[in-house]
Every structure is written in C-alpha cells, then in structure tokens.
Length: 423
Image 1 (tube, rainbow, N blue to C red):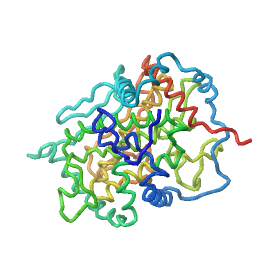
Image 2: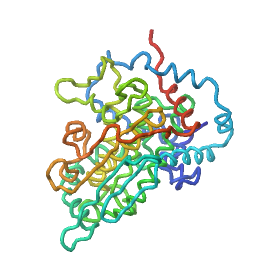
Image 3: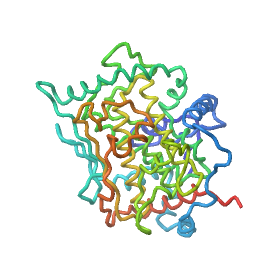
Image 4: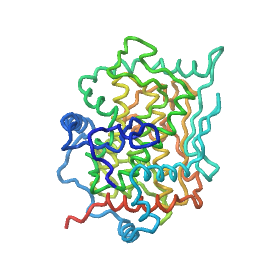
C-alpha cells in the first residue's frame, strides 16, 4: 500500500472519485517531508510550526518504552484474514472506495433542518455524534443573515491575525494542499513504515470533505473578504461558504485519530470497555504550574502537540483572511466528535460521547462568537466554559464496531504507531 509517493500534496482526490481526487487535500501524495521537489518549502514551514507549537523541550522527556495494549493488537495482526488479504491485492484507487464505504456506513446521513439543527448521527444509535444549532433570526433577518451578523462581529480577530501573515505565509501556502506533512513530522508517518495509519488518515480526510461541504452549502456563510475589502486575503478564497472550517474539522479529526492510535491515556472507565475521550488530550496543556506535564508520569507529548498542531492549522486560515474564528470552533468540535467516535467504534468500545454546539447566546459564555480561536481557548475553557459540550457515554455502540476490514486496518495501525522498548 504505497500511499505517499510524489510531491503533489492535495492532488489526490478530485471529489471522492479517484486518484486525482478532491484536487486532493492531503491526497495520496500528502506527506512531503524530504526527497521531493517541495521539501524545501515544507521544511521551512515545519521550522515555524515547531517554534509555534513546542513551548519547551526537556531532553529527558520521551515516549514511553512500550504502549500498553499493543501486545494484543500485535497478536491479532500476525496473519491477515482472507478478506484483508484480498483487499491488499486491489489497487489503491479501489481500496480507497472500500474503506470510504465502510467508514460512511458507521454514520447516519447528515440531517440538515432549515432553522433548526444540523445533526451527524451514528448509524444505529438514537443520540447524535455531533449536533449544532443554527442561530435564530431576529426581526426580518434571514437565518443566513443572522449567522453573518454574528460572524461580522469577529472581524477584529481577523484584523489582529493578519499581523502574523509574514511569519506564517509558507505554512498557509503548503496547508492549502497538504496538512499531513505536519502530522508526519510530529508522529513519524512514512509510506513504507506506517501505510495502514496513512490509509486511515486519508479516509478520514475524505470523509471530512464529504460531511463538511453539505454543511457549508446549508449555512452559506460569508467569508471575511466578502464582508470587507480591507481583509485582502493572501490566498485565493475558496468559492464555497466558510462555515464550518474544513481545515479545522479535518485537522482535529486527524489529531484525535492519531491520539487514539499512539496513546492509551485517553481511555477511561472500566476495563476493556473504557471509553476514549478526545478532550483528555487537553489535560497535558500548559495550565497552572504543570507545564508540559503528561498523565501517569509518562513523558509522551503527542496528545498535547497533536491538538496544538490542529489549532495552528485552523488559526492559519484566519491569518490568511479566509475564515472567521467561529468557523474553526465548529470545525474543531465536529472533528473531535468524528475522531472520538471512530476511535471508540474501531477499538470495540461499548459507548461513545455525543458532542454539541450552540450559538444562541451572544457574548455570554459559552459562546463561540465571543472568543478568538486558539488552542488555549479550548484548553483553558474546556470543558466547563467551552462552547463545545460533550456528554460522556451518550451513544450506545451496540454491535457497531465497524467492518472486519476496518478493525484489521485499525489493529495494524496501532502496531505501526507503537514504540519499541528502549531497554
């Protein structure tokens, strides 16, 4: 499964229909760390990203010698099933469609109700994976007008973010078509060593586009440059609506999936049915005197840096002048919800959390319209004052543990992302 080969970044999908896919955000050619024509610019962006998300570097801190639970995963993947063996003989184009079909089957169709809620449901559960309430119109204003009025109040943060354009320009340019390179630098993704992990991440990116585009059309929200010519974005603004931010949704979904693959500290509860909680990644944030602390005395930093990286990718879209902070809040909430649900399903857990967001209250916390979007905004205010609400264990997964192919891919990805003993 050669997933990342050339230098074309997003030139991977053109929709959901093939190699040239989606004009391919993080397509098949997504991680260009070295040895390809774009590596100079990517390396430059990795330097500025490193400086932006790594607040301290203690040389005594490293990953745990061996992540618990991987021995069972390793035992289960020694021999592929007949189904997976057949799957491996398919060319990449058709493998993508098979994985996409099985991921789509885990979710109910997106519900778009004019003036009410947007709901992404689980395939066989009463509770939704993610719910957002559309703002109620006031007076003669339309629903779209009510949303745009709230977004316009965030122009001050778009203005202040523009001060970072010179520093982040290379990041902004590369991240138009490639965000996987940034995650690859953080956790060591490689087409020969981690092909199953990359296959999962690419599928999540495709699913993100599949879900976000109908929402963008439904909300039909303006971008900053449509409200003021002074914004002068540094990249060509996309033609579709800005709410929610697709970059934020996809970055947080990828970060959450990787968190579930590389760490066990995100699991809580009783025994083997312990539920994965994506928000536990923020437990390692630099609040109080803890600095870059991690749970259980371990020195792994992935969970913190993964979320900081996702936030920086989202922030860069506001710096570029193509998104409001509220776009990123909703994208982040939905990305966390999708990623957490997938980790719980593929790990065989009994339950998962339901996420929701509401923006009916103006400038009374919690409100996603009254704060600038940053990692610290989520970390400091999560969960009590965060605009993102999470109900633990609300979704009964029952038998919805994914297809055999997805479970085998997940098990192999877990082994790929394990760390051998340093002894």
